[in-house]
Structures are given as structure tokens and as C-alpha cells.
Length: 281
Image (tube, rainbow, N blue to C red; front, side):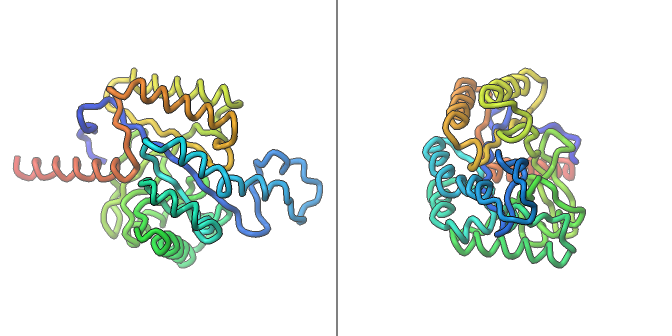
């Protein structure tokens, strides 16, 4: 990690990145945090309610978020399975100009459960599915649960990826050195519509307070606003999401609203520039 402090474009105090997760589970799987999942009394039997609840993001939620984000850049982390089952939704995200990051093949395809060969194949498969659909090869990766493996950085760099959103050990992005070149580590949000908030009102208040704290802190900061299409795009929560975006707009003179790719490219460019200056100093 470079010791030189990060400087955002235009002297902005903080970078704001918006992460939208569009997720599906493989047949026979569903999110354990679905509203009725904990009460399902028949282990091993398909929980159709939880499956249906999870599919809302691809059938409905993504379209509402695209409408909300008409003039705001965002990065959509999409499972390969979403692109296969709901290609029109992923294509609409691309056509709207948003970035698309690979988010494993499905939410139950977790890198920690894969050996190196299978993990490499999962990356290759997701890259091909999303690239073939949109015509643009993804260069950003987000693992389910933001949980990669010790092999993940090398495998991503090997596959031509620029950044990974699996990290939480530093607040600010940094460049990782891998056997296949640099990979930018970008913080994963510890606060989202399914983590750290006790309902819609708390989701709003917590995010407003978080952004204010980032702006009040000394030095450059970063703020990651995360929403899941099958959770936060529903009525009421999506209204809170809109109000958070309005608060971001109210402090636009202090923030750089950017996609993950822009942040990663800026970090690499700044490091290269400082390295060059040091070489010629």
C-alpha cells in the first residue's frame, strides 16, 4: 500500500460509490435471511416463498432502481445466473450506462467452497456470460458475502480484472500486488439494506449519519451506498434510498460521485504517477 495520501479528483473530500446487488440462488437454494426462511418447517423441501422473494430483484427491483438511478452512476454486481435467466434486466443496466461487476455464478456458489480449479472456472464462466450478453467484459468482481479466498486476487488479476470489492481491512482503496499484476481492493459496505439497519427509517438515518461522519473526518474518505435489488428496491425502503441520494446531492460540492471502475482507475493512476515522480526525484 502506498504511503502517499489519496487525493480525489477536483480536491473532493470523499468519493461516493453506489453498489447495487442483483442476485439469484441456484435451483434448490434460497437466502436464509428471507422473511419466512427461519420459520420453514420442512428441511430439504423447497421453500417456494423464499425463492419467490429472492427473485423479486431480477423481475421488479432492478427496474425500479434503474429508474431511481437515471442520472446517478452505479455499479451493479450481477450473478451469472441473473444474466442467464433475466438477460433483459442485465442488458438494461448496461444500456443505462452503469458498470456491471461479476458476482459469482450464483449466491450459493461461494469461492471458499471451491478448490483453485473450480474457482478459476467460476470466474471464467461469469466473465463469459456477462461479456457475451453486454459486449463488455467485466473488470470488477464481488464475491457472495464479500468473501473471496487467498487465491482470489491472483485468479482475478490472471483473468484481467482491475478491482475486487471483497475487502474491509482498510477504509480506503489500495493496490494489491499479485503474480499477474495490480488489483485494486475496494471496501465492501458494512452497512446496507440487509446489514446493520433495523428497518427503513434506520437505514436512512444510518446512511445519512455515515456520510456526514466521512465528510467530517480529516483526509480523503470514501462512502459506499449498498442496496440489494430484492430487498431495498421494494416500496418504502426504495423511498429511503431516494432520500439518501438526495442527501448526497445536497453535499455534491464535497463529494466525487463515481463508479467503482473510475475509483480503481484513479487509484492506479495516482500510484503510477507518484511512483514515476519518485523514480525521477
